[in-house]
Length: 266
Figure 1 (cartoon, rainbow, N blue to C red):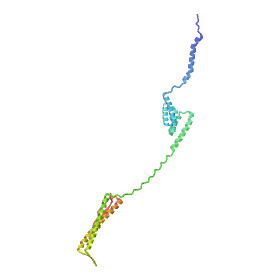
Figure 2 (figure 1 turned 180 degrees about the horizontal axis):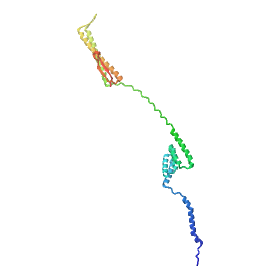
Figure 3 (figure 1 turned 30 degrees about the vertical axis):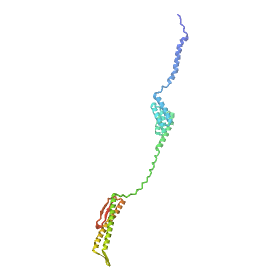
Figure 4 (figure 1 turned 135 degrees about the vertical axis):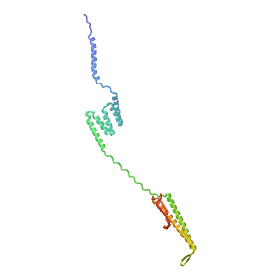
């Protein structure tokens, strides 16, 4: 019975290759287990929004930075967004909102950050209290506007007043005419009279002139009375501006003649 000869090297090569492959897999196994999974689309977008908000915050565009960080927090729920939003609200002077976001972040903050964060919140609360308790400024007094001086009242000359003025002027004209006629009649009567030691002796012709003189004198008195009453009364009514109606009427001859005037012109 014969033996086939195999060299050790030819027998050991497959085993050596398997051993080396196993060692390689064992060596690479832990490193592969520690690798993080690739970020999701929302997480990648949140990282972009975080960076965009940081740039906007540095440019002083705090409201735009808040909008970017709020969207990033919605996508990733990372607490650091809350802290940054609180800082932006503090820059804007919205102390109440800043305190709200800092308190929300404090629930997720590491223990070593909480003491500093609590001090910051207390300081903001004190500032907010000072702002709310500041007294409101008193309103400035309204300027006193002096009342305008009353405008002098101008007398109102109405058409009625003008008409009564016309009646008065006509009355004065008639009074003057009849007065001149009475003077003429008196001279004519004197021509028919003779002066004696006991007075004047007049003939029958003088009686007619004496009668005319009396009639013309009475008419003259009536004309002067009406004219004077109309002019004087109308002038007083216009100046006084009494709202009552005008009342004009003749006086009976038994009372001396003339005209009765009352009220005012509208």
